Length: 497
Image 1 (tube, rainbow, N blue to C red):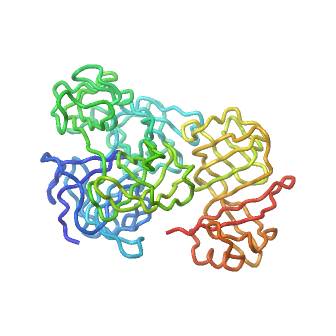
Image 2: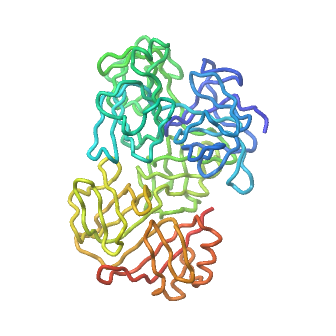
Image 3: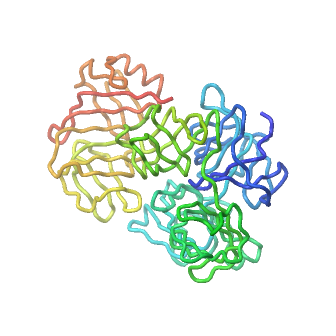
C-alpha cells in the first residue's frame, strides 16, 4: 500500500479528532487542519495495543515493517516488524489494509497521542492493591493493577511506585468514560520532576471536553482551569470553544489549579468520512435506542444492522465498553458487528461480600471470585446482602477472578436460576465438561437438545466439535441451584468472527 496518508486523524485516549498535517519526514509541527480519512480501500482502526511483535489492535495483527509511527512533538519514526516504539496499552490509530481473513493486516501509519501529561497531585483509592486513582492536571485517572501497562524505560516505574509524594511527569493513554474519568491503559514517566521537564522545552498537556466557560478567555476541563488569553488558537470558533467541545491544551506555566495555555486547539471527533472499513474501541456515550445509535469517542455509530457479540441490545448503555466494526458512510460508522469488551456475564445469588477486599462470592459458582470497586463497577453494591439475586457483567483478571464493570441487584430475594457466560478455558467431550472462567460446568445433566448454537439446538456432538474448531468462542450455561451446586440444563456457543 502506498504511503499517501499525509492527512491523518488522531485518536487520543478515547478522544478522536482531526490533527495537523504531517509530512512523511516531519515531526509534530504546524500546518493546515486535515479533513481526516485515508481514501480508497483499506482500514482505519482505533483502539488499544493488545500485543507486540507487530501491532495488534481491535483483534487484527498488523505487520509494521516500514510503517510510520507518528507521535506528537517527535519526528516521524520508521517502524520495523517488532514495533518497539509502540507500547502495550497505547491507544493508537492504525491506517493500513487488512487481509481477507480479517485477522491480519499491514499498517502504513500508526498514530499515538496521549490524553494528559503532567505532575501527579494525589494518589487515592479504596483498595490500592487493585486500583489507584491519580489526579493529573485536574484529570481523574484510574490505574488498575494488571490491566494498565507501564513503560519500562524508567527503572522501577510501575503500579507500586504510584504513591502520594511521587515526583515526575506522567504521560497517560486510555479511554475516557462519560463522566470524564480516564480509564488508563498505558502510563509512561517522561521526566523526573516538573522543572526538569519544562527546562527541556516540553509542555504540559491535557485533552478533554469543555465543562464550563467561566469567562471569555477561560475554560474548565474537569477540575482544571485553563487560561487561554494569550494562547495560539487552532480550529477555535469565534468566542472560543463551546461547552462540550473537545479541546487540546498545551502550556508551560502551571499555577495552583490553573494552566496558562500557549496553544489551544478544538478537535473534530471521528475517524473521517466514507471509510470502506473501520473499527473503534471505547466507552458508549449518547445511546439513542430510538435511532439505534451511540458514540464512541465522538464517532457516531449506528448499530441498526449490527450483530451483537457477547451481549444483547438491552446490555447497551452509556459507559459500557465495546468495539464497533463496519464501513463509515458519510460520518456514521454503520456497524456490522458490535462486540462487548466485558464479555463475562453472571446471574446468580450473592453468597458473601468482603467489604474490605471488595471480593464477592456467588451461590452455585464456588471458586469464582468477583472483584468490586467504586472506580470500576457501575451500580450500587454497598448494600449487597447474601441471597440477593444479581446480574453481573465483567472482565477476567485471573483464572477464576473477574472485575465487575456493571452490577445490578435484580431482587433482594434469592432465585434458583444460575447463568454463566465467558470464554472457554478448556473442554472435554469424553468427560462432558466445559471450563468457563476457571469453573467446571458438568454437562452430564444436559439433554441433547440443550446443546445450542445461538438459540438453535445442535446436539452434544456438534457442540463439542464446534468448540474444537473455534476455541475462542463464548459459551453461556444455564441451570438451577441444588443445594450448594448448580445442575445445568442448557449450554450455548456463540462463535466469534
